[in-house]
Image 1 (cartoon, rainbow, N blue to C red):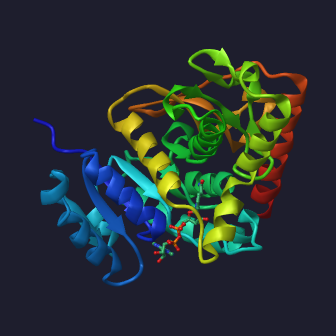
Image 2 (cartoon, protein in one colour):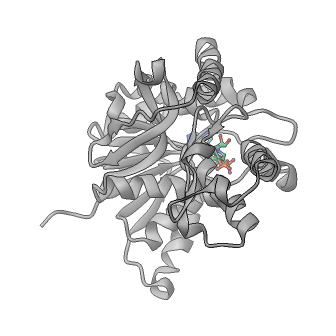
Length: 308
Ligand code: TXD
């Protein structure tokens, strides 16, 4: 009888603690929450555990400041790092978060050499490169969470526009997790109906623009930090696809080696997520304009990686 899967979440702040909440309530496995702050992960997970009898989940959720407690994890979700403040770009976090992600990835990978790393910390695409280098893991076992969040924002705005269920909206957003991301209108449908039949172009364009600026909109409202409900939910959806070997097709930041004409960096593309992490990168055909936008977004990622 196999033991329960083990999910380590590094960074017990807004995203990490909320990811622990989603993972525990879905009973994806036992959860270990790591932070540098003494007592904080221990307190949050003790509190979360006490919701178990109410919500009906038996996941064992523990907090720690010691990587020994993360040993043998199946999944490592890295959320540690500073979030943006109003006026900051994700790129402003590069130097500080690169150091943090490097430490978290190397220390956790040493204790769980067979794990799959899901990176959430920003600037996301560059932090994936840091995590792959620091962990020494192969490209299929390092994947970044951004496209699912960006696509979820896009789908939410479309559902609002049509006053219809988000469950029936299928969409794809490619590219780096930045203002240059590429929502693909040509691959957006509602119950198979192309979106262009349902929403006029001017409204679609403003929805695409709002999606691109979706992170900044929330940072501007919160003032003290950035989004965390949807980002953590997206990260846990990736963990679920991997742990249950669902082989879902989801937009994730994957390490490309020639796909889409891009090499040597992580960029948001559709991929199959299963027990081995990124099972396959899926290349969809793009219009010249969409391809140019994807390459422009990738160039922004390359610029950040070059600064590392
Ligand atoms: O789509 C996406 N990928 C993004 C990612 C969506 C939203 C925001 N995202 C980014 O995630 C954000 O820009 C940050 O870089 C991270 C974490 O955001 P969060 O809102 O959770 O930040 P918090 O609440 O400040 O939590 C960060 C925690 C905090 O408790 C620190 O003590 C801890 O990280 N931290 C560390 N933990 C372990 N090890 C080290 N070295 C460390 N340094 C800080």
